[in-house]
Image (cartoon, rainbow, N blue to C red; front, side, top):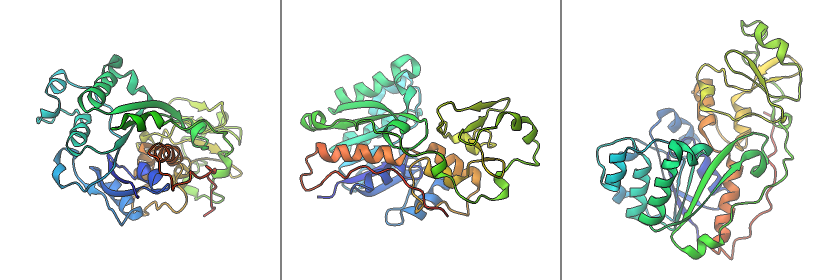
Length: 332
C-alpha cells in the first residue's frame, strides 16, 4: 500500500523528496512564495505547488492522505490566539494553528513537522509547550521529537541542527517509531564541489577581496564572511546554510580552490542539502533566489532516514528498509 502525503509550507520540496525516495506519494502541496513554485513545479510536475496562503486552503477539498508534512515558520503565539485555538479566524499569524486545524478535520495517520532547533526554547519554552499540548491533548496524537544534525544523520558535511516532531494517531505505532541512529560522516565538502565554476563566483578583483584574502588560506576549510569579519569553520564542514544567503550574499560559504577565493555555487549548496544533481535549479531564477530557497530547505537525506523509520513503525512488512548510502556528486 502506498502511503500518501500532503506537503505544507513546502518550499522547494525537501520534505517531499525525502519521503518520495522511500516510496511515499505526494497528493497535495502548498506554499505562498511564487519563486518556490518555479523550482517546485520544475521538479514535481505530477503534483505541482498550489500557490497561496495556508489560511485560504479549503480543508474539505484536500485529497485523502496518510501523513502531513510541514516545515512551518516559528512564531510567537498570541495569548488571544491560543485561547481561541482552532476557532481563531482573525489571522493573528499563529500559523501552527492552521496545521492543527487541518489535522483536526482530516485526522491523518500521522505527521512530520520540522523547525529550527531553538523551537524548544523559543519564547522561554512557551511556544513548544503550546505545540505539544495542542498535538497531544487537544488532537490526541502521540509525538516524539529530536534535534538532528545533518552531519550526524545525513552523511552530508553541513553543520545543520533542526528539530523534527513526528506524531501518530496510534500509540502503538508511536512506540514502534524511533528516530534514526547516527551514522559516520564519510562525505567531504571537497567531494561535493563542482570541477569548473564560472568567474562570477570568484572574488579576485572585487572590492571585498582585500578584506577577506588574508584570512582565507586553507583549501580544506569552509569560511563565512559575516559583514565585518571572516569566520573559519573549525570542523572542516560547511556551516549552516541559511535563507540570508539570498540577501546580499554575505552568508554564502566561501572556499579557496585552485583558482582562488570563491563562494559556493547554488548547485554545491543543493548538494550540501542532500539534493542530487537531477534536482532542477531553474535558470530563470536569480542566484539570490536559489540561495534563499536552498537555505530555507531541509536536508533530504536526513528526511529520507526519518521516512524509512516511519515505514518500519507502521509495519510495512513488504518493504525492506534500504541500506543508507552516502550522497555522491555527479560533476556537471
